[in-house]
Image (tube, rainbow, N blue to C red):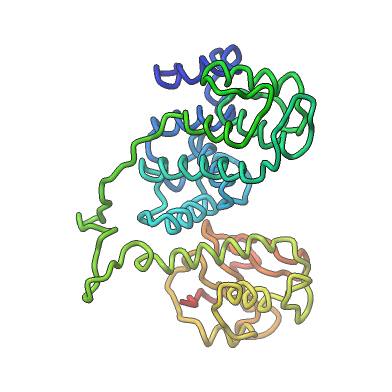
Length: 347
């Protein structure tokens, strides 16, 4: 059952007749403003959870280019680290939890991303037009739930209907000529969420954001969580290379061998590591259990470390294998279990 706030948003939507008779799982993809209301009233989210609230978070992080994996409603490794990158960039405590501060900032950032699109609106949009300018208009209408068609760039009946409803509700002239200024005014009519000004505390009750070093400078999340964010970036880069073919001696996206792949990923972050598996083994620092971003080593075709990959959590690692190229494999597989030598950290 929808509560009063969300119900009011739904009632002014083109989708009202559809969504009121459907479960949350059906209409949760409806449009960002409705999702904003739902998300703000939901419980906090963290690693291991699943469901439609996770889906909404994934969608927003995908819009903001933080999350590139599939929208699967599962709060797994890639969702957590996309979130931590977002927290890091926004100077929010990097803890991988979707709390009120994160929700508010996700909503604000997504809205700004839509507003930024208006800079690409090169000319006013009139009935009968088609092209990228019309797509910008359609996406703006879809943001508020006024447009339920495909983003096809055609100013047809659905686009006009959406503009007519928005025009009537907000008193903004939109139907005969749509300008960037008018659309920007539409965005600014949306209810703004009051920013939570509360400082964030660590587990001991210490002010995390405003922590100071000995010289009086701010330490904050940016320095405290640097390694976490570096590891998240390692995974992001490694994941983007999945499917690259295996090439003996390869060290570029045209083809990798196992150590060439690892070296490329770390060098993309400005971290220089040795070229061969055995040299990486000697260079890195041993750890008892692998953490995300660490290197896992195996003894395969010769004694000693001869194969390696990057650990991504959940007992999985990304590596350049001879058969399938860059892929994700499971440490629990019999083949890898019997050849596992240990894990080491680059940082």
